[in-house]
Image 1 (cartoon, rainbow, N blue to C red):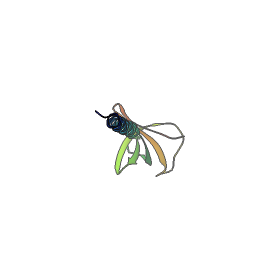
Image 2: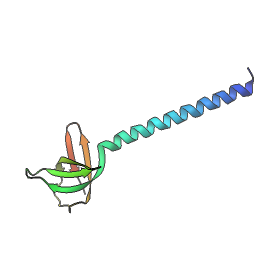
Image 3: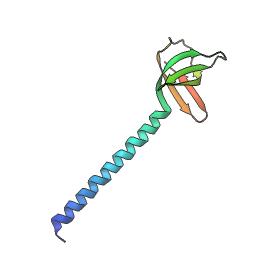
Image 4: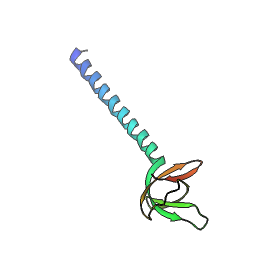
Length: 89
C-alpha cells in the first residue's frame, strides 16, 4: 500500500474520531445544562411552593433563599430526580 494513501486514511480516521469526540462532549454538556436551566419566576402556588416556567412548562419547586424576586424575573431552576429547586442571588 502506498505510504501517502495510508497517511491520508489515518488523517481521515483522526478527523472522524475528533468529530465524534466533540459531538459526545457537546451532548454531555447539553445533558448537564438540562438539569440546571434559567427559568422565569412565576411566584408561589396556593400551597406555598415556588413555581417557575421553562420552555412552556410550569415547574413546582422548592425555593432556596429568602429574598423576594419580581414575577417573570430569570431564576435558576435545578431539575433533579429528587425534586425541583429554585434559587437566585
